[in-house]
Every structure is written in structure tokens, then in C-alpha cells.
Length: 86
Image (cartoon, rainbow, N blue to C red):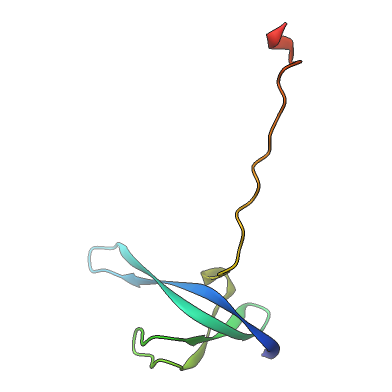
């Protein structure tokens, strides 16, 4: 596990199975402390699923997204000279 010199804030999405086969999704704000090939080392800020506030544990990378992530810019197309406008 490679630890970061500067940590960043992210949102950890966890899913808890229900008895009827569905899942309950919960999102928790975390501080990302480091990473390995497939996982991040995160520190939770609130108690969640048997973990204490401030406790750190590894989670899968695809379950964490950056808090400061910007939305993708939408592409704009110019159809004024398209063949169907003639």
C-alpha cells in the first residue's frame, strides 16, 4: 500500500444486501490516505457498518469517487450545414 503525502476527499459507495435480494446503497464521505493496485486506504469520518469514526480500512477503487470531480463537458454539434437541412 502506497501512502499519499497529501490526502484527498472522496465519497465511498457501499451496498448492503437486503433479505429480498435487493441492495441498500449508502454513500459516506471519506479521506483517501493511500492506494494499491486495486484498492484505496480510506478513513471514514462517521461510524458506519461496524467501523468507528476515524478508522481506516481498504476499499475497492471502483467504489470511491473524488469529491471535487467535475462533470464531463457535453459535446456541441453544428448541424446547420447538414444534408437534411438543404
